Image (cartoon, rainbow, N blue to C red):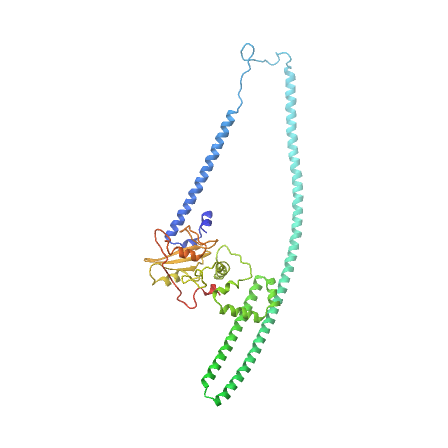
Length: 429
């Protein structure tokens, strides 16, 4: 991120607002250094070009021609008078030859001018012909593309109708299965209640019967709740696939997947730990946008790129680090740190860059440092040039080394969660 800012010599105003005064000064200092480096580079290049030009000029002067007067036998400058020396042509003949040569050159110049005009006419003629041919070809291609788009639109509408029809059939089938299960369960409950009533006539164990009835009802409600969640999840995935146009990716879902499989996958995800999401990654190809523009995109980025790099986990364990928080604002972070001692810190997922924000409690207030995670490493943006392989490495490093020399920030005490469920739960669902 810092390299991109120095390359473009521009920083987004929203990103600038996330930096404190010290970070801004350091960033502006680095931008000024880059400006000076570019200026010196241009000056050195201009100086070298000027030196080359001077050297070339001196070489031309040293190799230049000199004029010397031709001298006769007597040592004086040799003088020739036209027409007086033996073999000289008469003045009239020389004049005729000069006039003839001048006429020939003029005729050659006029011929060249006529040829340029003729060549321009020929070029224009064939250029216009080629332009007309290209226009004809483009018109034919455009007509074919229009017909192809119409056919593709009709095919897409047909596939969407088929998907909706299959979805409705699958929904009806699932509802029928749930209804049958409810009828079977009602019969089981009826027999259980009947047996319990008969048993209660011969025994005083009414408390055990009530407990069994309560458990049966709770299990029935839990099963119905899970079935509704499975139907909602199935409908959401189907509608998302239709909106994105991923028809091919859904074909196997209708052919080889039933409602029970969807329920099983959903129930396993609900009952497992956050690490289970590592094996349940999305099958869609992830292409990271240039910057985060919504919470859903940030969550998708975290699941696709950060969970495989164990961001937010403790070292060598499967537990979430105490200092890790989800997508919370600067104000929420300061509220969590309000009554904490100096050196308390937390790490939250940033909404401005692909990375995080470290919020730090100091004696006179708070500090916020942006952590760039857009590359293959983690580093503070505009503060510390050190690069770390994991987010945990960066945190552990600054538990012993200060972040800035002027502030002397050491990460002493992590700030944990105060909500249930924790604010990072959407990242691991």
